Length: 181
Ligand code: 5GP
Image (spheres, rainbow, N blue to C red):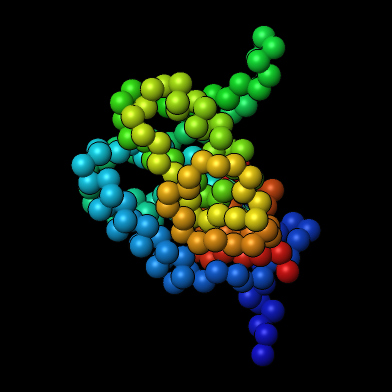
């Protein structure tokens, strides 16, 4: 019997369970083990892209056992005063990035616009290497060619909430991932 209490209503939309906690945990632990092996000699700086990545980052980084540093950023975009169009700024970044291996921690990669902006800013800061890790990827929506090194789970082109992801600020605290019902 379908239990209606399993659905979640956030504002005007109803979501149904999609990816259970256990499946998320297994995917995240697999990523952490790969990162531990691949980056053990890199002393990486993990850049957690807020807000949506907070839960993924917390679970992932608890299982990362190599020497590392962790920083939290927000991506802001504004119109520059020149003809350069949109300028991207990383808010909260205080670490020196030159010659560092930087691991971007994203909640979800959709079209890839956010990843592209991060690449542009980080490249200007002369990092040694950019690595990306995301909890979720929508392969059908991803339009860029930047390599996504660590992917937790691939999902179809649907709107999901939970595990850090929100709908209008709601649902970030959900332990599981839900999809529009
Ligand atoms: P992109 O720049 O790759 O198109 O999108 C990345 C951002 O869009 C994510 O960090 C996230 O904030 C938002 N986003 C993309 N897809 C979803 C989704 O299915 N659910 C939610 N809640 N946010 C999404």
